[in-house]
Length: 356
Image (cartoon, rainbow, N blue to C red; front, side, top):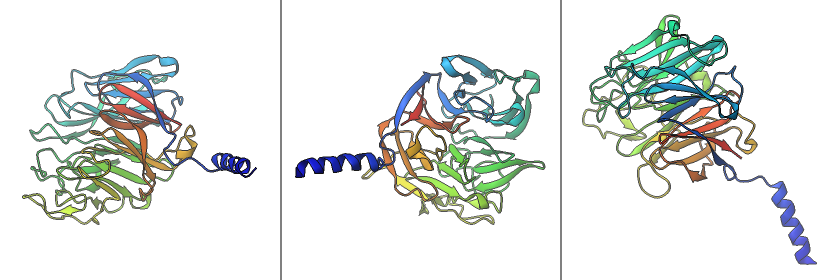
């Protein structure tokens, strides 16, 4: 009798107690693409529709049922080499679409297009260049993500490449490199600086808080956090090249701390070795705001590209971190659908939906 009661009690607890955060998350392959680097979707698109950025220079739309079509093909204008290529897309109301890429000279460009009413292709005559920045001879550290948030277009750029910010851009407020920028009516304005290579970052669509995954150099990977109330105020300094994570003074050409902003320390950092899941390339993700994974709502997803692991954490603090039970080799990026469902992108070709 005692064993029967205990068995019933265990069964009841199994039903009542929620699963550990992240324990039930799985990956589901959606489709394969040619060197994909990002998934995004405009707010006006159906929840099953995603746009996939292929690094060689194409953007494809994938709809319900697996139908896909080429929305934009600028392979003739894109230098695809290592970290160079077509890197990001962002959408706004009224069918505006921006793309960020390295051109044939290796310099940085953002071009605005207008999509047709169905969202299936761009109007070529609508092309308009809205951002230009020269990039040094190094091919790495181009950034970068576009995000459209609260009526503004945002862009992250890398420091220009080489070791230890060799070209001394990150702390230089007159340079467009190593920055987080916002396009306003008077041009591009500074939101953050002192960044090394902010490859993937996002706004929490529920709160407007900002999360940046800034790729480290020799020892530390970091995730930075800025509350919505501070976005767009005095530009904040994320510390590179004086700091790598919370470590200081590792660069012989240390520029120190410049400019007016507060120095922002990482909300979470991890090393390249030692115990626990480390890695070498942090991939900033998103706070989950969809409905398909109810146990994950309000948790932040992020990853490491070299190790392929995915973690979730409490938003804002990044505490209570959970390692998911799968890996995705060469995990390059996360993306959101219009209804907030999450996708993960493998540079090797696979685009995965994260599901309970």
